[in-house]
Length: 209
Image 1: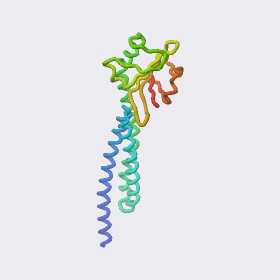
Image 2 (image 1 turned 135 degrees about the vertical axis):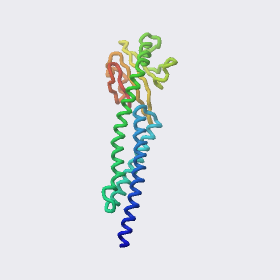
Image 3 (image 1 turned 180 degrees about the vertical axis):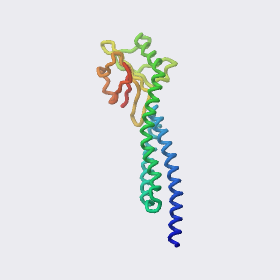
Image 4 (image 1 turned 60 degrees about the horizontal axis):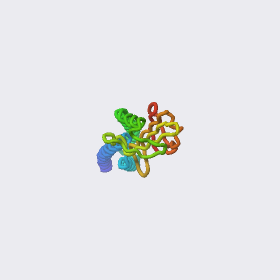
């Protein structure tokens, strides 16, 4: 009789602990997805460190939840798996959050595209001088928010290439947008600087290293 009472008490204690673990895992998962979304929409060193730290913490939490689930399986059965299932769910949701962040970044680019095109127009009209060497270009007042660094050059055929560096990471990570007036970035002599180049629309590319 005493062993039955102890067993019931253990079950109650385990259920309380499962609820607490589940809530903590849920809250951590929310933080992870939010951080992933923010990092995907605008990459910064601080956000990258936060995302990496949260992922490492989440992996540890998953391992702890799994070990506890296995140890409590005989007492409370499948309910012991609730925190583990929550962990797996948020791992999957974090990938969806990254996709949503990417879409948000592209929407922001589209909203700012007229301003980017204004800079391109000023370069083509030589109101902003661009030579045959890749050099940093200072943006006019009112446009400095578009990128933390802009580099541009023209080749011997006067094909204009412009890098708008908008985001960064840790330790050396850059991302932004590339404009190529002939829509052929592979012909650019500096394209090897960017391992990842993906086309957004004619003449515009997303770049990152």
